[in-house]
Amino acid sequence: MLTRPDGKLDVTRVSAIVDQIAWLRNQGYEVILVSSGAMASGRSELRINHSLDSVEQRQLFSSLGQVKLIGLYYDLFRDFGIHVGQVLTMKENFNPGEQYENQRACMTVMLENGVLPIVNENDTVAVTELMFTDNDELSGLISMMMEADTLVLLSNIDGIFTTHPDDPQAELIREVTPGRDLSEYIQPEKSAFGRGGMHSKYTTASKVSQNGIRVFIANGERDNILINLIEHKAETPHTEFIPARKES
Image 1 (cartoon, rainbow, N blue to C red):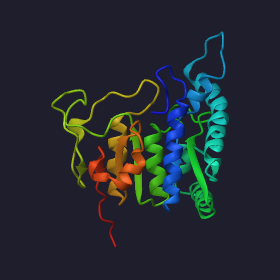
Image 2: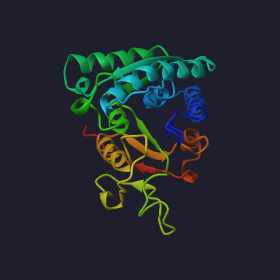
Image 3: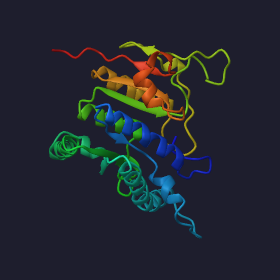
């Protein structure tokens, strides 16, 4: 969602998301932003005249891009008087133990002091089997770790449809109750510049909602999508996963 057709960062879209998060903060919501975009940012910074394998590209472009991406977020959020902090993580940090507790404590103290955590995978270190499936998986783990009320997964389509979204007969599934299986409706496609797709969003949403967290899948390319989910949910296209009741 944050990349243009040429694979570079869509700064206009990033700015629109920042505007909406600033609105959420003004309404009293605590927000954690899980953002991709480092590779796209780095890809536009450096031209190389020799070949690199996929791991080398990932490490090189993400190391350049993380600096540019967090700098962009810093400048955009500063216009709203919002402080941001970067959290780079790896899959192994979500295993029970000291690293997990340190990570949770870090984001807790940031939120308590009005700092917006911006989370991304540490692409310079996490390769092959150490990688998250995508940022959908990462955001799901973050939401469960921080015991969030709501997780919003932004895509470039409105949610989960009964058939391919381009099919005139396709119907948007607005609500998913606990335990409902939608696997027959999930399309295998993913974006050209991302690792995820609707399958990963569905998998994450199902798991997170079973842990008592409400999940929205919505189109991040729609104007003011985050605001409309809060203020005009009934009229705003999206798929909502109803959270399972937590055992007392």
